[in-house]
Image 1 (cartoon, rainbow over the protein chains, first blue to last red):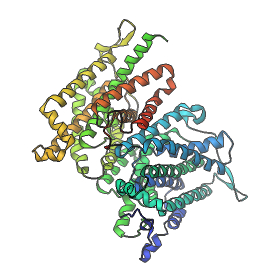
Image 2: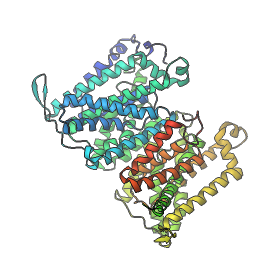
Image 3: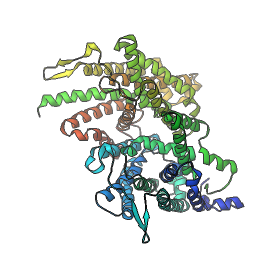
Image 4: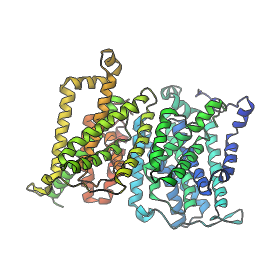
Amino acid sequence: MTSPSSGEAVAKPSSSGLGRLLDQRVLLSIAVLAVLPWLLPSQALAVNVLIYGVVVMGYNLLFGYTGLLSFGQAAFFGAGAYFTGIAIGRYGVPWFAAVPIAVLLSTGLAAAIGIVSTRTRGIYFSMVTLALAQLVYYVALQASSFTGGENGLRGFTVDRISLLGFPVNFLDPVNKYYVLMAFAALAMWFQSRILNSPFGAVIEAIRENEQRARACGYDVERSKLIVFMLSGAISSLGGCMLALHLSIVPLDILHYQTSGMIVMMVLLGGARSFFGPFVGAAAFLILEDVISVWTPHWQLFVGAIFVLFVLFLPKGIWGTLLDTLGVGKARP
Amino acid sequence: MDLSLIIMQLLSGIALGAVLVITALGLTIVFGMLGVVNFAHGALFMIGAYAGLYLASLTGSFWWGLLLAPILIGGFGMLIEYVLIRRLYGRSIDDPLLLTFGLSYILVEGVRIVFGSDGIPFPTPPQLIGVLDLGIGFFPRYRLFVIALVAVVLLVLWLTLEKTRIGLIVRAGARDPTIMQVLGVDIGRVWLAIFGLGVGLAALGGVLAGPMRSVNPEMGSLVLAEAFVVTVIGGLGSIVGAVVAGLMVGISISLVALFAPEMATIVMFALMAVVLLIRPQGLFGIRGRTA
């Protein structure tokens, strides 16, 4: 139930003790992510959960909260990574400046794709976002002097960074994890702010009933474009994190299979919940990790599990858990 | 650059477009009737190509492959509708899309397990090897055959839809399924048949494309994007739109390849963006339904 006239319906504090605790969703999420490297079997897995969690969280703004099923989120994930790599490797921009530049440029790309795609509705929107994201893929493939084409982008390793004057070895996985976690925390704070704002209520109103939102006087087209750009911005930050983490950007990051993976992650975890994207990213990556140990054909099983989720558990792991416990109006 | 070269390239574009038309048609007919966009359409195109190749080598004749693969894969499509998609009618319109996306993962990986990850060459049938002298230049016989066959399939489809009783039921069912049920038509069976037809057309596209492209498990992903572009340009649910847009995209790709080869893969997406800015519902789409 969403009331488009005010923001309070989205973030009304719950009365129960557990509910009140869960309303602190940003702090709780950061706390979980802080201990994640010790909960998961490997550090590498934890870093990936962090990165994909941010990408999927940004996507959730579009799919979960606004109800727009895009199949082109890889364009912004990839754009963030490519712009970061190009800024550092080609133009010698320091890493801390490269990240905001990359997010800004990716948001511009999201504006361009958003202007075309948000003019369409329903299934059309899914097809158009997929096609336009593939356009970005082919442009990156052809512009190989900038992007490295099929070989991916290389040659921008960030090995040593300076935090408040202290030199930090960025090749050390623990250091790297916590530096990247700072970005994730920033993204979560930003997303929570958006959801708690009146604008957050407007996008949920659009999801629930587009015509009614229009009748209430909200500019639906403009809101969709803005949420498309915000979602692209957050997902592109995940791309920046990936570029800093891997020191290469594979071309496949832009392919629609990556968009599809983002969709799978948000559904496995639970769309329309704050922490669901991280649960979904973790579930997908752990599945991939575990299954690929005994068969190279892990996609067969992941696909089958996803089909079962669509059929029988459409709210995902975290969403179903929240419903079962019945806690948290803010859906942490 | 002389005129005959441009005309030859135009013909190439029509042959390329013909495969796109058949593939996009399957997508658009299913959407027009069931309101479902099949994200596994590209994967089923790929399976069609593999099935055609396998059946051709089994029977020793390309023609058996061409005939049997669409029927077999169409039947498989009906199974998909009956077992999986049927459960999702009445739920969010996103659900069938998500389900078929998951399905495409399973299908692609299944083919990798059975046939391996590497591409397999699809031999051109011996009767159609070589080129034909058209007076202004030489054109591959196989491509001429593809254009002719697609024209025949389109004619048969059009006659069935417009002139027969079955076509009448199908067209009425697309407009108002509830009334059709009241009138005593088992709409579930119509949907089953239409989904099978759509998948069969994807498989036919796959077999036809086989000798023109190499056959590999990933071939479906490009085809899916192409089919989407064609249906979006033409207008989702419009058969005329799929035909016009398919030829338009095929010809654009061929002509651009002549002047600026590196832009060939990009041009169709640009075309789609322009059409969407001018007519969000596509060239032949009905406003309100999708845009």
